[in-house]
Image 1 (tube, rainbow, N blue to C red):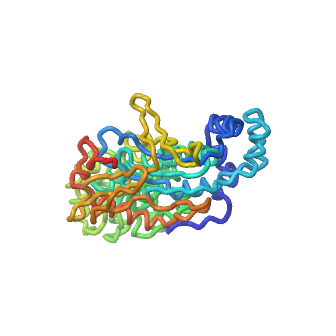
Image 2: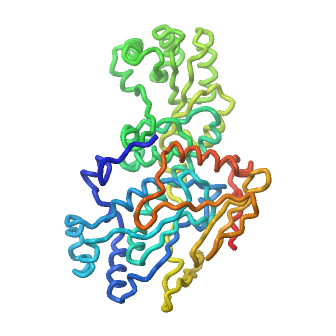
Image 3: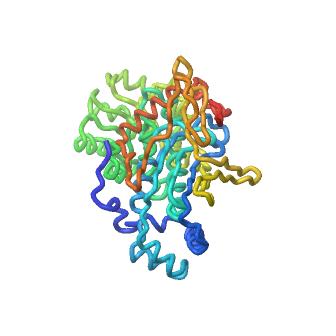
Length: 442
């Protein structure tokens, strides 16, 4: 499910960023101006967004932000208000050209939720140099952020197994980043978010009950629990670690009855406490009351709790910071451009440690007869040969300037599960290692 857009931007953005054209770097526009002056701006060009490597120790990454990128391309417009901001940045001919800017090219890319590896061609942007170069910064900003969050979220949901993960990191990051984080985490398998803007904009299910302040507000913990159960019903989740956990659990069951939905533990040795609380709940007849744990969880802490009687995990800080890797290191490089004879010629950067590979790319996931992924195969200039069990990875996202690659988050979530599920078993290991499959260029 995904919320429908009703205008040029989401309601919050109507107030501050109706156009995405200023979500860019100064030098994109100075390059444009110089290219217009030299007569090269309208050369056919191919740009590629890709990673040179995975974050250190990671075995795979997850693509996210595709839907947000399509919105950003649509909203990349230079209206009078936007052009006024550029006074002193560009000359008048460049301003005149920008006033009618519309991306009219094609974009191919990995679909949202797909796994990726070093040198995976995540986006192929085809158009004139002038049209395509302007999208560099905003596309990198969206993809680097959202894919970092989804990559961390995927590791968390993988080790959590059937136990749901709740995204609750809004207060640990920028207010708009929080919305994107909730969306990306949902793509990678999180069940719900605490963020209401993500619910409104993207249809991400939201959930929440109370904080310690609610308990402290009342004269007694019993008064707080009674107020919450009266308002939200016996199926609510009671926060039980404000004072004494054992006494709080006793009060919770006394007030809500054995139908109490869940208790949440937010501090201490979560594994030990979960065991003690489970035993107490069972003794009190609340055998179906669930235990939710929070408190600076990451994929390693979740894995360590695998044998504890925990029913759900609430994850905040570590999720919205990419669990130590807040960006993916994606780059956006020109890989082909029109030559003097009108044909495309490959171009590449040769800088030490920052090379790019020239040529328009095609990609497929090579799989064995058992359906397990064996390699990321990238064709240069033409599609690689499918040996019969392979899966093409690039799908059309924009055609002649019109977005054609929109899909629901439900579809993206399903794709992620399928893509992660076809990776070799080593992808499930939390220990540091190399990419779980190699990347082969043909």
